[in-house]
Length: 455
Ligand SMILES: NC(=O)c1ccc[n+]([C@@H]2O[C@H](COP(=O)([O-])OP(=O)(O)OC[C@H]3O[C@@H](n4cnc5c(N)ncnc54)[C@H](O)[C@@H]3O)[C@@H](O)[C@H]2O)c1
Image 1 (cartoon, helix red, strand yellow):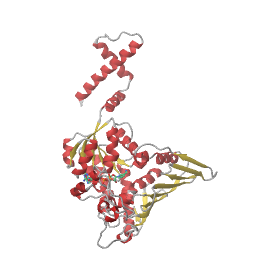
Image 2 (tube, protein in one colour; image 1 turned 45 degrees about the vertical axis):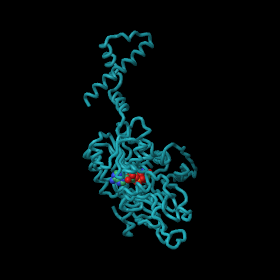
Image 3 (cartoon, rainbow, N blue to C red; image 1 turned 30 degrees about the vertical axis):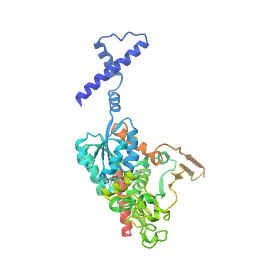
Image 4 (cartoon, rainbow, N blue to C red; image 1 turned 90 degrees about the vertical axis):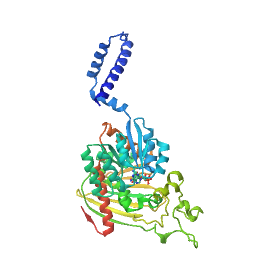
């Protein structure tokens, strides 16, 4: 490090010298033949003019961050992988996945050395940071290992599948002193960010009630693979709802939750609800790619997986993981609709609805303050504020931005990279990740026990 700094400083001195020559020549100066000792004088003057911190920033900017991707599936490849590949300040050095077939495909697109063993990757690669995009239940073990190796980390939501699991990652982070950030991309969604600014400006007054209804036209995404199984995701209140509980917590300023109550269930995706007539001796599934009813247009929910390299039979042979399992016949332990209600110690109340049986996708928020009410639609990218006393309405239309999840994904990644470089503050901490998982865990417990859970 010391040697590097010496070389870097010499390079910088010469760069400054060249800039100075140009400047002086521009003013009619004769600097090009000046003796070497003069260069040092100029450099010393430069150091006096600019803070050392800004020079350090120049060096940090020039060094590419070495990144590893842990979990080379949809998010690992299409979201973080593709974005990292496009960034000039990052280099994808290593990939880890337990499925070698899938990882090979991803490597052909992203590059980097492949490892089926995480410990080996962490030993051999000199990484600056890692992004964890495995199924939720693997986050804890992977994150603890990465942090124990002294590597900065971005963990896609949720932090873990239990509050205790979250705490274990927090302990590892505190021991390592490294940066660890939650992948709460909704925090970076331009509409929700704008809403947060409006709340912080005091336009709504004191927020007392928030309701969010999430309609998700992607039952298939969740019910046809690991997400619908509690052992992999901690349940959908954690897997999906951790986003939403985090937004509530963020808008309210992270008060302590005191009570959680939940009603939820699986009404539709059950074997007895298959929405077509079965033919004698022709079974359903197991995946749409090989299902008679899906292939012949009889099943309206059919969604054959098109990327047969990453998700086809060869990859399935490795670990049995199918992305297109029959939603009706799968062994699911999640809900396909439900409500979770939280009460906080400051008296605020929130209600989150999740519905995976519908023909469109949107998150529709109603945020009630003691001065005004806000109605938000992520799909329409609108925020409508109605003043309680004047009845005046203001509508904000938030422009579309590039990138996944309504433009949120690139902003999340940028926030992480810039936090690692020391340029900005960590916007979503592991403690906040634990808070949302704790609420989700309580919601699952409330659903199971049929009672309100007190914190
Ligand atoms: N923030 C968001 O909006 C958002 C959206 C979707 C998914 N996610 C999260 O991203 C994560 C990944 O989801 P996905 O949809 O990409 O899943 P996926 O199934 O497409 O990919 C997961 C990958 O992890 C691999 N894997 C499984 N166990 C592993 C282990 N122990 N070590 C290394 N690799 C392992 C699998 O082989 C697969 O390639 C999940 O935590 C999910 O909750 C976040």
